[in-house]
Image (cartoon, rainbow, N blue to C red; front, top):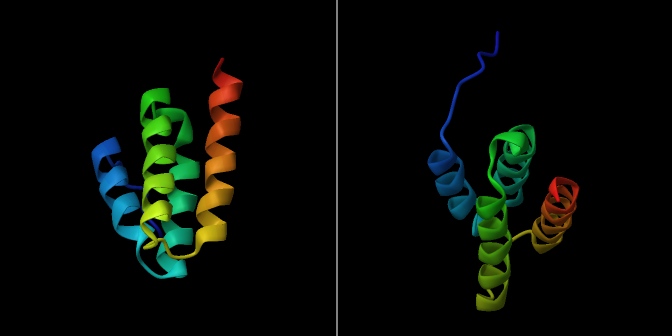
Length: 83
């Protein structure tokens, strides 16, 4: 039986930062968790996720680049829907 746990935006962000440079399994898990909680994340934080993805990509350290860039598209669509 899976239990739903409450997490803070800070915990999600730390998991996100860790997953940027980790294996694709971790990336997918974190991306899916962020999507499940997207309505609880403020627009300013969504922009920070986008900025971090691009910065990490430019550093050459990003893993599973396609998944992260797809997530950027998802975040941008979410931001547009909030305007």
